Amino acid sequence: MKTLRIANCSGFYGDRLAAAREMVEGGPIDILTGDYLAELTMAILWRLRRRDPKGGYVRTFLTQMEQVLGTCLDRGIKVVSNAGGLNPEGMAEQLGELAGSLGLQPRIACVTGDDLSARVGELQKLNGLRHFDTGQPLPSSIKPLTANAYLGGTGIAEALSWDADVVVTGRVTDAAVVIGPGMWAFDWAADDYDALAGALVAGHIIECGAQCTGGNYAFFDRVPKPERVGFPIAELTADGSAVITKHPGTGGVVSVGTVTAQLLYEVGGVRYHNPDVTARLDTIRLSQEGPDRVSVTGVRGEPPPYTLKVALNYLGGYRNSVTMMITGLDADRKAESVTTALWESLGGAEQFEEAAVTFSDTGHADPTTNEAAMSQLRITVKGPDPNKVGRRFSRAAVELALAHYPGFFMTAPPQGSSPYAVYWPTTVDASEVVQQVRMGDRERTVSPPRRSEPGIAEDASTDPVEVDSTPSIKHSRRWQDTETVTVPLGRVLGARSGDKGGDANVGVWAESPDAFEWMVEFLTESRFRELISEAAGLEVERHVLPNLWAVNFVVRGLLGEGVSSNTRTDPQAKSLGEYLRAKFVPLPASLLKG
Image (cartoon, rainbow, N blue to C red):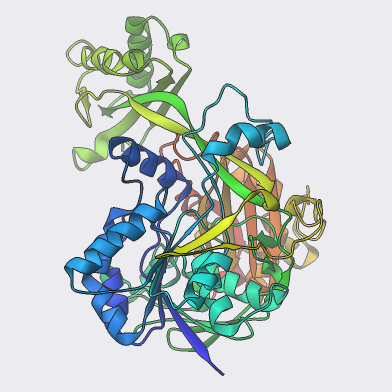
C-alpha cells in the first residue's frame, strides 16, 4: 500500500526554528507541513501588516525555507504551509525572491479566497454574521481588523496537481495542510468521507507539532530526552488510516497516550467539522504498533457542514496590568488595602470598562526562602481611552511604592497601554467563499465539495449521542463501597486543555478500562464544576469517547471574548487540565495499585 509521509515542522508562530531542517534531514519524508495560524495570530499579523503593508505573513517561515528549500527540491519533498497568513501572495513573492538569491527555481503556488474583510458589510446583510456561540449578530458599528474563512484542502490539492513544489495559503484549517496532500496523492473523491476523515484526524494529531510526541504531556516523566522532543510524521495511506511516528533518535515519545492527549486538544463534541469532511471522533481506534509508532484506524466520516467558519477580529480597546509582590504576614489584608488605595488615587475602578483583580496567596508560613514568603497581586484594566488605561494607571500604581505596605515591589516597570483584539467566530454559507489557486500566470477557481443540507450536522451540541448531561455525581454500585484514598486526580488520569474562542476545553483520559469506567461515573458535569470553581455557574458539556477511554469537557464562556481580550492569567486555558489533575479526590485504592 502506498504511504505518504507527511511531516510537521511548526505548531504555532514562534515554534522551534530549526524544526524544518530537523524534519528534512532526519529521515525520508514526502511532504513538509507547517501550521502557524492560531486565532490570536491573525490579530498579530494585522499589527505587523499595519506597520508594513507588504507584510502580514509569517516571516520565520522564510528563514526555515532558506535552510531547507534546496534539499527539498533535490529530494522531491513538497512544502505545504499556511504561513501566508493575511498575505499569501506576498509570501509567495518573497519566497520567489529568496529562491532566486539561492540560485533555485521552485514552482510556488498560493491559495487565496479566505480573506472576507472587504465583504463584511455585504455578509452582515445576508446573515448578520451571528456569533457562533451566542447567536448575537455582529453590530453594524464594528469594523473588523480581519475576517477570514477557514478553507479546506481542495486548493492545496489542486496546486499540487500542477506539480507545485511549495504551496502557501492564507487561513485554512489546521488539518487542511494534511488533507490537501492526501487528496492529491490518493485522488480521493469529494464523497470519500471515511478516507478524508482519517486524513483530518491525522492532520489534527500532528498540527501542533511536538504536542503529540511528548510535548506538554501530562505524564511528562515518561518522556525520554524532553530537552529536544522530535516533531511528528503521519504516514498516511489511501484508506485514510495513518501511523503517527517521528524520526529515529529524536527526543520524546509517540504512544497511545501522547496521541490521545493531542486528539483531545481544542475539540468539542464527537463531530469534528472541517470544510472537506466531518470526522466522528468517537470512531477513532488507536493501537501501539511498535516503538514510537501509533496506528490510527477506523475513522468514519460524514459530509462537511453547509457553512464555513469565519474568524473575525476587531479592536476591542486598550489594556494594561501591574503585578505587585506581597511578602510575609497578612498578605490578604495588604492586597485588599493596596487595591483600595489604587482605586482611590485613580478616581474609582468603575471608570474602566473592566477591572480585574487576582490575588494569589502563595506565601508559606515560616518560609525557608525569601521567595517562599511571596504572594502575587495582579490588577488589569481595560477601556477605550489608551491614556487612562496606560501611563496614568501605571503611574498611580508606582506612586504607592513608598507609601503603602512593607516590602512593596512590582515585577516590571510601568507600561503603556496596548491594544487588544476581540475574537468573533461566525459562519457564512460555503457558496459565498471562492477559493483560488495561483502559480505564475496560471490561476483557477476551485469548486467546494458537496455538503450536507442546511441544518444537518451543523451544531454538534444538538446531537444527543454527544452530550452527556448527567446531573448526578453518585458512584455506580461497583465503586460505591470500594476503599478509597484521597489523592490528586492526576495520579490516574491525564488531561490536556486549550481554548476554543471564548470557551475552554479539558480532555481527560484514563489508561485502563477500570479507570475509564470510574472516571465516567465520577467525573460528571456537576463534579467538574465542584472541582473547578471558575466553572461554577457556567454551562459545561461532557462528551464521552469510549474508544479513547476519554471524556471531553467544554466550558462555555470561561475565556470571555477570547484569547486576546480576556484578563485571565492563563488566557488560553493551557493550564486548566493540570489544575484539574491537581485536585484531591477520593480515588478507589484499587486504581492506584500497580
